[in-house]
Image (cartoon, rainbow, N blue to C red; front, side, top):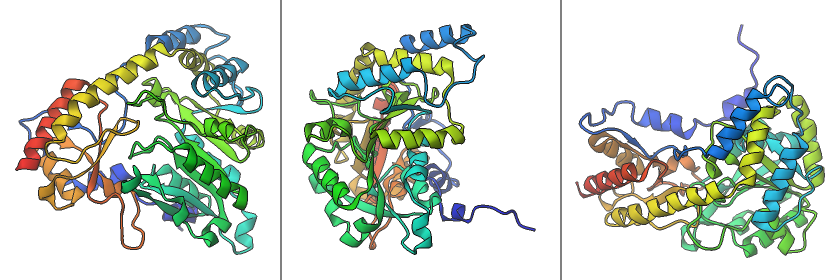
Length: 410
């Protein structure tokens, strides 16, 4: 007798790293060179002392450590710290009691939000809901849509317009069925930041068709220009939408504070959405430990470590990109820690062939761009590109860049 599994699981695509493992399963990396992995976006700068000290102190306190069940809504202190950060960073007001909710990072919140927003009654009426996302995209958007029983729609990113998502390419009939849009700014993998005009267009579409906008802003604090990236709530406030209707932003400490293992973030926005999300999470069982909440509040309150972290990335990109520019069309992104670049000319636009040879000959791992996108009408917008995460120390990234140059030149 077969297991009674959820049939929607069969709709899921292999995750990009699973596809990468399969791609190089028969590749033997050059043993004479130490491995360098640019394939995964896992921050490797030190976690700041302000965070670790607060975590250790909280664990040592019986009342605030691990000896009590945490509330789903989080402590007032953490919600206030998140709201204060929104005010300092974006100049926006969010009520800590009704418009802010701590989450276990952003990944699980991005996924769970689809369960909150999508209406299963639409299935019975024969109108399967649609979730629109950029293409290429963070793969959780697609998985969230599929496991909620929705249909993903992939809006292409235009390399001629700084990889801006072409929202106007989505047909009106698709918008009419859309219940949720995932926006990612700064983008993964592109690093593109959505300008105010693009937000205005998305808000207009939301007003017309009634869908919720989820703004993934995990890379907002790693940027290379003087002006920090515009946030969704900031854009809404600038356009007079101070109630953040049908809008929710999601962020975390993983990239900002080099703490991917802490699993800490928050969402903020439309009070009705936050209320519904809190109800869902009460049953979902995703409450943050009190010790992590204490550490998180300390991290959100401190900007010194964020500035220092940003300076490390800026210095690294300034040294690495000129080396790679000898053989690749690399451009400094608006933000984030990825380079999203076409493969060297001699590979004829084949990102998988480049990834295989680079690993075999030079023991450097990169992620083929096609694994981060979906083919639509015969075109995969990630094909012919690779994503390179400059997360290691500068010497390792420089060594990787030199090896890539040698590989490109054959």
